[in-house]
Structure formats: structure tokens, C-alpha cells
Amino acid sequence: MEVLMNNFIFGQYIPGKSLIYRLNPRLKLIASVLLIIASFINHNLLGFIILLGICGVIIQVSQVGWIFFIKGNQFFIYMIFLTSILQILFSNGGTIYWHYGIFTISSFGLQIASLAFLRFLVAIVILTVYLMTTNPAKIAQTIQGICYPLKFVGVNLDDIGLVTAIALRFVPTLTEEVNNLRNAQKSRGINFEKCSIIKRIKSNIAILVPLFMSVFRRAEQLAATMILRGYTDGKHRTYIRQSNWSKFDSLILIVVLLVFGLILSLNINF
Image (cartoon, rainbow, N blue to C red; front, side, top):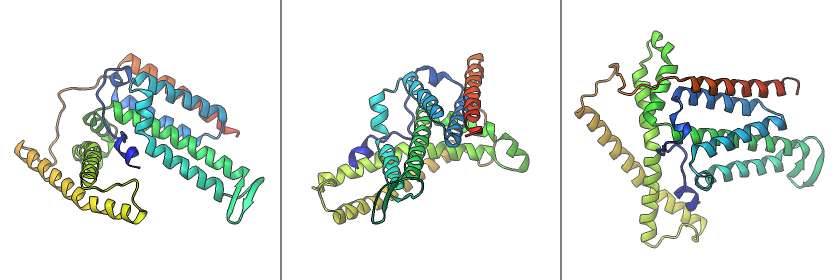
């Protein structure tokens, strides 16, 4: 578990110059949502082959590296795999292949577990690449733009954008703090991997208190910095750099819509 958390990259922005980094943030958000929806409505093998192929292309084009990407998502991969195993063992229906006590392996369980594994795998890949290749400030700006109609019912979009940017920024901060605290515990002679489960739980609980203290301290520092820079709640803000929509963005959107339509058509009469 320690190795999994040390390599955790979900939610972290990694600067780069590949093609995906240069795409419009609004396009990346729309495309990500459409592909994730397509994966969850899909029941067809060909559909998953198409979606997994797209995921492979996305990882390759992003240039983040396959080994780095897989290691960074080991935690989610293991969790999805464990969930699938539980679904296989505890789902009844269809043809029974094996049965022992409360455990049953059936055709229905295998089908449900396979669908869940593939769907969450596609979702994790797409979300990880999106968050890894899109600046948190751009994500906040994109969400503000998409939620613009809510402005007419009194919703403060600037506050939504600010909260989104801060939340995304705190993801790598929390990961870094957890790793630092675990290393501090190891320097005191605590071995998280070889000690008993009870001691391991106690050691992890001992991390929570300083972790919360560190988070509150950083939040207080952030609030003080915003006050010193003259931040005023509820005021509209503009951005120095605006993301322009290009013809290439339109082409990518058309391709994503075609893929979404293809997945939908494959499952209409399923």
C-alpha cells in the first residue's frame, strides 16, 4: 500500500508540451464526459475495444509514459480488480460454474464483474489524463464557462471556479503531506509493511492528526495570502490568458461525437 500511495498521480497536474496539452480545456472536459458516459452505457465487446483503443492513443499522445502512468494508478487498478473479484464471488445468476458455501462463480457474476472493471478502467484513464494535462486554473475557468447559465439564477460562478481550483491544488498537497508523515514515522523505526494489522492501523491513525493540522495550516496560509493580494468575495474576475477554440478542436470534437454515436448505436438493440 505504501508503494501505491508514493506513486499516486491522480489529480496531479504534470506540465508538458504534447498535443493534448495544447487542446482547448473545454474540449477536453466535454470529450472526457462523453467518453466516460459511453463506457458506462456500453455492453458491447466491440465498444470496449474501441474505448480501450482510444485510451491507449490518449496515453501515447500525452507522452506521460506508460510505466509512469500504470504505476501512478496502481491503487485504483487494484481497487477495481478487488471489487471485480468480490462481484464474481457474490453474484448469483445464469450458469453456475463453481459453488462453495457463500461463494459462487456464475456467468452473470463474470459478466457484471467484467463490465464494471472495463468501465471504471476507462473512466480512470480518461480522468487521470485530463487532470494531468490540464492546468487547475484552466479547469476552473472551463467549469465557470460551462456553468454560465447558472449565473442568471444567482449562482456566483467566480466562487465556484475558485473552490474548484483550490480543491484540485490540494490533491497533490495532501499526497505530499501523507508521504512526508509516513517517512517521518519510518525514521522513528515504524515499518508499515511488516508490522501487524493492529499496529498498522494505529500507525496510520497517528498520521491523521498531523495531516489535518498541516492541511488547516496551509488553508490558513492560503487565506492570508488571498487577503494580502486584495481578494474580495463575489467580485468578477478576468483572465490574462484566454483559451481559444481552433479548427483542430472542432475536428477532435466531431471525432468524439462520432465515437459516442457509434457506441450508442452498438447498444441500442443489445
